[in-house]
Length: 102
Image (tube, rainbow, N blue to C red; front, side, top):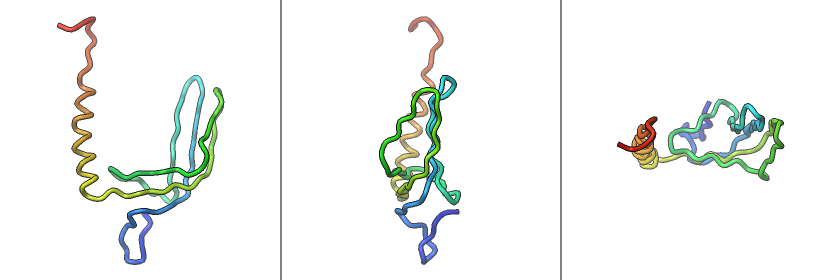
């Protein structure tokens, strides 16, 4: 569910609670932020999590509740991110399993 203003439009910037999950083990090194109420960031949106930086010792995990500010991208920003993504993706195609260049 996306937050709505009193006029039914999506606000361009809002603050919402979130859950941060961090794991720092031999099997996994990962960090995830889940926004409350099923809010999903869209293409080009920015999410800033508030609070002091977190540090998790090796072999442990951590779950923390914080506030996050979501700034929605406008149409031009979304188009620019999609355009850039096409070129970033093509860089992944340049993979070679040979010993050297031909």
